[in-house]
Length: 175
Image 1 (cartoon, rainbow, N blue to C red):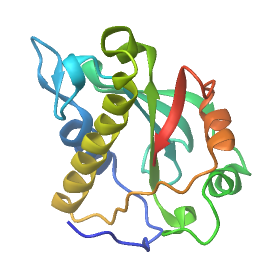
Image 2: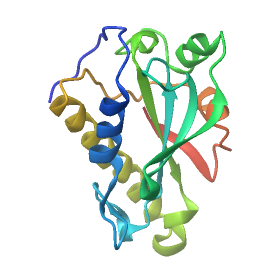
Image 3: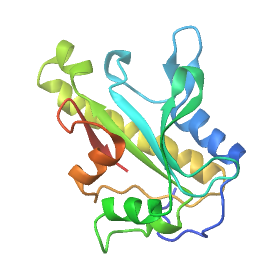
Image 4: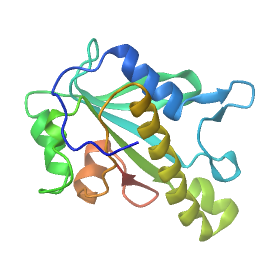
């Protein structure tokens, strides 16, 4: 796996997006609903949001991924200023130009989901899980021949606002 800092500005196919989600973040055991990445106590405090810019057959906008059902739920339509809004969440001069990416994955941590069981250590576990999920998505992208890069340089408040999360009990951790 290698980080790729530029994108072709060509649409992803639905099949490519589905493959990324299924292999990178999906359910690997339907009976237990365990997923393809490690999680503390199988509590899955990491939530996955997608900022869809350019995917064939998927309208631009903010989406939430429901792994057990392998479905996307649109939270907000893209609109004419969507690319600018997405770009404004990423810190300037960062590692990659997201305005040419077909999709930007944003991970959040729902801290109460793990702190109830693990106390303050749950914060660390939630952050570790976002790293596990990120690596899975990066490896899936590599397997599909797609460009990808992990990105931690984002504006917290703007990103949380874009996703509609409060930044306290659920907060953006990684893109």
